[in-house]
Amino acid sequence: SQKIEQNSEALNIQEGKTATLTCNYTNYSPAYLQWYRQDPGRGPVFLLLIRENEKEKRKERLKVTFDTTLKQSLFHITASQPADSATYLCALDMYSGGGADGLTFGKGTHLIIQP
Amino acid sequence: SQTIHQWPATLVQPVGSPLSLECTVEGTSNPNLYWYRQAAGRGLQLLFYSVGIGQISSEVPQNLSASRPQDRQFILSSKKLLLSDSGFYLCAWTRGLGNYGYTFGSGTRLTVV
Image 1 (tube, each protein chain N blue to C red):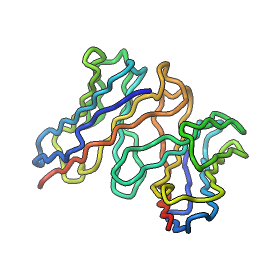
Image 2 (image 1 turned 180 degrees about the horizontal axis):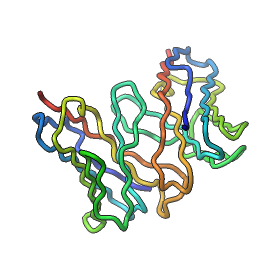
Image 3 (image 1 turned 135 degrees about the vertical axis):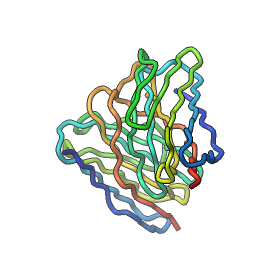
């Protein structure tokens, strides 16, 4: 199965700046990669999905890139706001082939946007 | 629109007692259903998944079991809880072959004492 590495230390960003979070995986290239937001005591909320044949995906202030050569995805929040403060999780299909047998998640990066 | 319901929100149970957590999905049919556990300071761990009624796949050998008696109902159970079963339990659903985002329930905080 996959192993995912996310920076487990908190990331402090000043309001208005761009926050960039990193997700690295170590085994096979996934069919797709997903990003979630999780607030304390709540379930994760789906943000974006990017497929292996896509280099970049955007949604409002969010941008995700996917580099299968580097085995890495970058998650960007532009014009960051204090309300963006949360833990952000990277997730990949559990096994190669992109089936319905579940996602494996990274431990997440805690993002803090300072006003 | 689709919604997912999970209950109870919090639960404190003694060691050795049984457990039953229920999850239901509304507004869709034949969803893929999942149970995850998030222990303190750890990532989400997939426990069980189901692609149809009566079809359960287990990812981690443990003290827990799952059942899917109806299309949109997913139940997590234990006959005898262990201290190590404490954690944040999350139910999720998705459609298709896994190339859609997952929708998570609000979770159950289980403390085994």
